[in-house]
Length: 388
Ligand SMILES: *Cc1c(COP(=O)(O)O)cnc(C)c1O
Image (cartoon, rainbow, N blue to C red; front, side, top):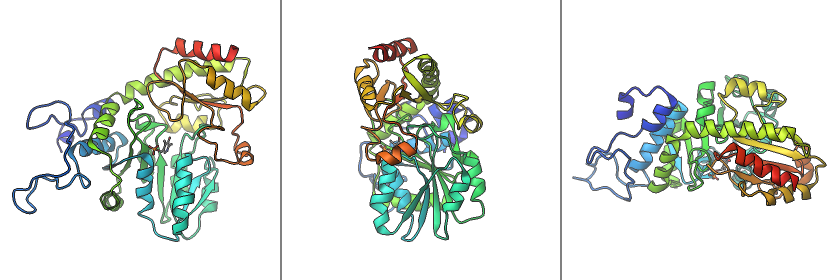
């Protein structure tokens, strides 16, 4: 592969060049968007590596190689959404297999485990993954998968990836890490011993809120082969334009993440001083329960922040999120623009109130995806919304 011939050591160099050699037929520096469903063969079976675009498409191949290089894995596979990527993992399992997952995982992941795959006999147990002992205690003979998200949504809880890998060593289980919040720029789970990384490319990898996609990265060649089989057999693939958009996104991932984090730190500092803010959740704060682990396993703390208003009144939080002018009120995260949302009535509305409160998810919790605008403007916007 051309990109392996060149010396692609640093993260940003890999982001810009891995998987992306200039087009040999024209010299085009950008990977062409191969809008084609099929490929002409000289004789039956005599083709140039591509037969049909569900099985393989050169724009998708470029993105798959690019993401594998960024996560430090040998194989990358792309899907039409983050959940389609998760679905492919579940399709490599069998009935009676068991999953142990963290209990504050992405709502859609919980939904596919519980409502789509449990009826097929794939059971899941949800535990607090901040202590690896909770994971091993929940395992039984049939456990095949450990599913970790770190940092989590919206409380930014942190799980110790290498401690969990160590705790399950020697057993016939694979450790999967959803690395959507951290991105490979800040955290590389495969290097910490995880077997597979899953991404919603919709978020920071795409980075511009203009595409939905998912990806899997692993160095386990046997599992990669089964996942590629499912990718083709079940067909949850992204189109070439979607792949191009994500490839454009990963080129600037490093500079965007640096700015997301710089702005998040400024916003956190402002919120901590504000009299209407009761507490701020950000793994970069020394007071955050997962700070030490995050500092060890991540190279930065990212752009997601959540906070709770004094008084813990749901209506106060609803009023606040409706008053910001630069922070847009919307679900999703990871784009260049700043977003604000109220998890209890939006992204996390499906969780019963009792369970929510037990997990520390207050009615007055507000989540920010801090964008890359000017920090002064973001702070002024939050200030006017808090003071109104
Ligand atoms: C958005 C998200 C997903 C699901 O990805 P889609 O692209 O929306 O299907 C999974 N995990 C996390 C952490 C997410 O934020």
